[in-house]
Image 1 (cartoon, one colour):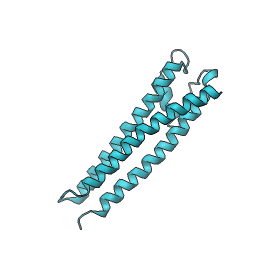
Image 2 (cartoon, rainbow, N blue to C red):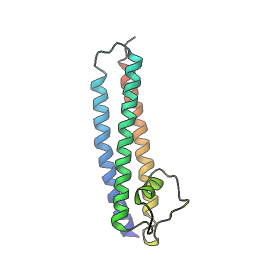
Image 3 (tube, rainbow, N blue to C red):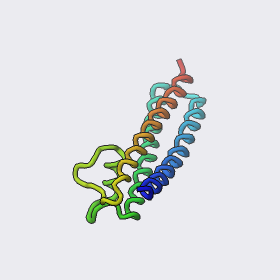
Length: 140
């Protein structure tokens, strides 16, 4: 059990690092972009939000791939199961319906779910911050 917690914690910390880099880049870029001269502020605001959410989705996909890679290395998923699908099911907290991890790695699924919930919450906070930055400097 300790091995599962340590390995799951290591993957989670790796994902937190990925997320931290992307989040600081997104917020910094949004702050800089809010200074740009723009004529149609509603179109600009929509574009900023679409790009922000798109970048965050790419970050989450990278984090799911990180979990899938760990699952593949550790042989967590049953034979014939797609590790990427399994990682998505766990990370998004969709839950098990068709695939269950092998017995010796059962804690990794809930750890991935906990990691996903925390990082989705962080993304929500960043989306709000980008929107706040964009609205603050919006032309009247």
